[in-house]
Image (cartoon, rainbow, N blue to C red; front, side, top):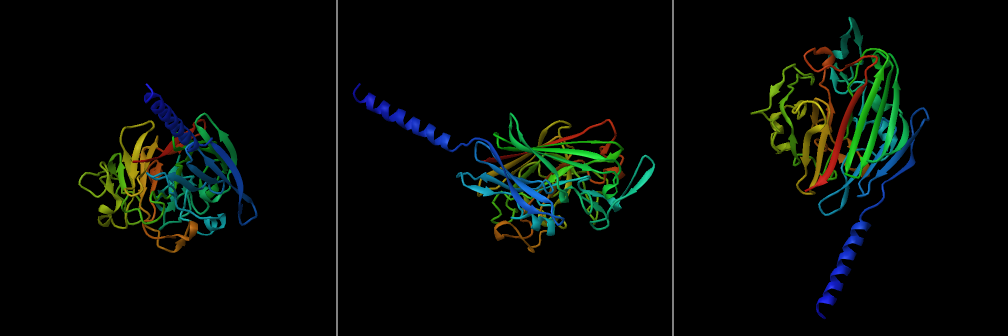
Length: 372
């Protein structure tokens, strides 16, 4: 009995220490705001920092709705920034390949910048190889959004609102857009999109973070990717879908089982920049999962949308100096953009992207962070 009591005391003390240590590793969810600079016309831009109870931290600016930073732990608990970007807003304004931004009114490409709707032809900016890309010359990634802090049962977040006026970038209708970013205590960045219009218009909103789960220490070619899709969209030389929904089986586009990005990228001209046709129908479901072997970090992507654009950072060319002076070379980041299909306004066989008065556009995307 005399030997049991001291042992019990030691055990209880050890248990208490572990519990205290776990508690110290957790923080209360928080949100803070700071100045991030000014646009060319002098408009003030702000940066919000969201932190969940586990210490995961997301920074978002109301310029372009850009996620500038995501700090997530590796398997040892060491935090690392897993998205590409800049340290100041002027760099985003001067030269950014859509780093971390909200994309609209139409994410991805519309062939030749033209489409017909209800018997009328609309002409848009042709800002990418003769096609319309990501909303045009001044898309949603280049405007200042109205922002409101959120505290929900899920976590802390930011509500961004923007009124895209009739005729902006050639699109019809006044489109009232709301995007909620929420960082949950389940280590998820949840993005809820909503929009209403007063005139029929195409709508395809998405998010464009360039992820690098190694903390941008090297390229992403060793990242292992699973995409929940049996079909993908072959594209022409200007990255417009041919209209064929091709089987991934037997091709370098087969990611139904985890494969390294670099394993077969040499067989894809230019690298990956294709839309995948997701399985399992409608509703929120797993679209993709990515893991980085050395850090152990993982990323799950869930969506309500029918498609996922997988882009392997092909156009990064070593001319961009990002956060902390890091040079972003080719394939230094990958994008997982949940969305409808490219060029849908010109493809009646694709799921419709037309929003009409009285209807509501809704789309949810979740990026879930983990380790293995």
